[in-house]
Length: 109
Image (cartoon, rainbow, N blue to C red; front, side, top):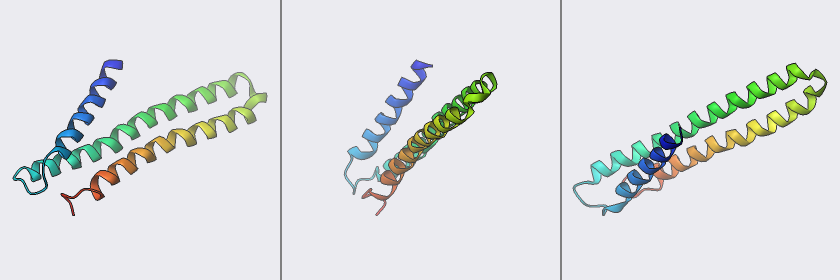
């Protein structure tokens, strides 16, 4: 699993480098535009995938903790909600990155 994560990061970094490397008026601006759109889609998709898996693990752990110790359900629930909010913020960061790639780009303007 670690190799897949490292390869994904390297692929996204490589696409961003190629997409931002050329001048605005070159013939390859269409290819760069496609790479920017692909990088924006990957930033949201990978963030949502990772956060969905993390939320599933967190909720599963909280449910098993409550099933083992019902008296601690209040503390477990509060901790779970705080954790889910922090995980969800990572997805929002991916969305912000994709919006920056799409709307702060001279090729699209």
